[in-house]
Image (cartoon, rainbow, N blue to C red; front, top):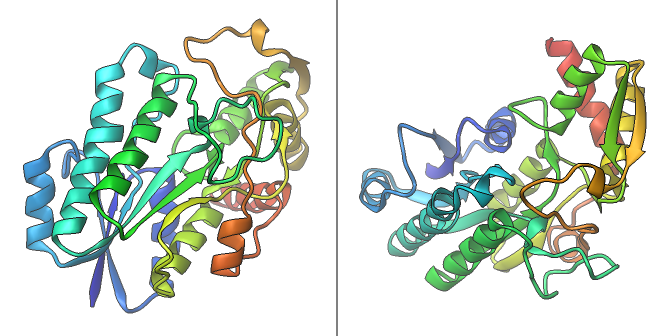
Length: 287
């Protein structure tokens, strides 16, 4: 049986993978997180690879605190660049395939159309910059890799925008939400299925891919949809980014073109609102 290593094993994407990993009987999934494995520790990474025959490594571990990264540059770099590099080099040594999760924040949002995989990157903050450097480190270390850029990831697990809105909506009658940042909410459960498809079908067209749900939305649109579907009576007011200054700048339009992954994996990607409905149905069933 082949072993698939999943780092960031307690996070929302890894947990969504865990929910469906039984669908592939020929693979055994090994989930690791801190303190069990610190990906910034090269020796520990190598020891884990030496102790287990790894066929694929899915790197879900990341420093994702966008604003905090501005003041914790070294930590963000250590996890998003050094950690990714350590895993990629171990994959190269042990002939494993690496799947690196990245972000739409590698773009500056000024293009005005959907971003494809060949468009120029220009991250606006430390988080996006370190994720971009992590992509470069992985691609330099081994050919057999996939970089999957995704956006606005949420699920019924861990901390994310959907769960924050559900909490705030139950506590307040009115909320201000930014309406001039446009992207695509992405259900981690859908991304997990795409990742398993890459592994199960032994896809070998390596490189960078974009994956998000279909359609575009602002954070305002996203919040409105959450409250409508969850039947929460909270008035949402649209505000401009300037009304909520943050340490990190964010791309104003970061929606991505998914043609490449749809063609190569023969994928049908759900519309973002349909996936949100599914996620909220699961969440309310479990809570």
